[in-house]
Length: 427
Image (cartoon, rainbow, N blue to C red):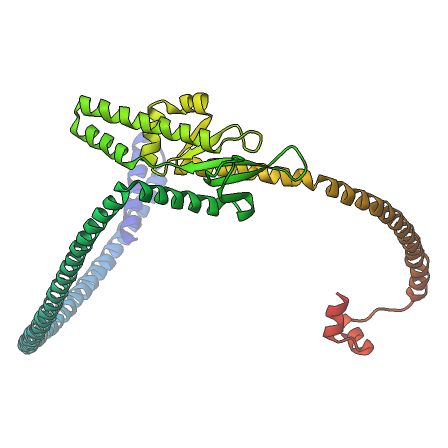
């Protein structure tokens, strides 16, 4: 602040001097005044300088004291820091030693634990290995025993099968001997035909060992009973079984050998016996009008039937001898078709009874319609009465109850003593 004042005073002096220089002709009084002012200013400046020097000395002393205090403070802080650092170093060293000792103890403990765990694991693994080996050995012995037992069982089954095959071979030989006999073959075909008839038809629909031709003693093995033109009359459909097994076997053997001459000879012999069998059936069992115009020759083997069909005997036997051939499958289909025909005839016989029943139902249904109409009228009248009751009476009761305040449903149930069972019954 004092420097500013001195600076301003110097500026004023310079200005005054500059003014005096510019106006040399002014009065001396003014110059004197100026000189006096300048002297005053000089004295003031001197006083200010003295004051400033004093102040500077005081400030220097204060700064010096402050420096000494700061030095002392820094020195004390440095000492405190040094002491603190030394203490921290000592603590760190002690903590490091403690940590090292603790870590060493922990390392030893962990090593001991790991060693004990390894020993325990080794013992357990050894025990597990022994157990697994024992189980594996036991399972292996059991499986091997089972396998040997299974092999023994299968070998026993094979031995039994060989014995059965030997028995079957002897049985086949016996069957071959049986089939080599013409009469036995006929019985076999007859048994098979009878089984098919019994499975599909009723006993009333066919006869066995019947003479279909009047004045003849020849009886056919089976004859289906078909309705005739007259009332209660019966027309027979003759069915006879033929089994030229020896000729068919010779043909099969010829096919296996592949010899054309033998094949042609066997085919010729089979053709001859099939035609002879068809002629016998036609001559012995067909007698129109007591029988149908045709008869059926049953071949008990599908292979034999297929060979005869392949040889083209279906059309020729029908044309020449009025004979239809049938195998086991085609015989079953033919009998099923005839069974449907029997059912149709039964329906035709009962048609008059059905019409009478329908007439009675019609008359009763008309009565039922009248009763139903009367019932409907009564229901309509009851509905009208109910509508009137629900509409008019309900509105009157509602008007009377408009002024009555309603209460909670639970309280109303308690007051009216409506229990839950009554409520569910009403619902």
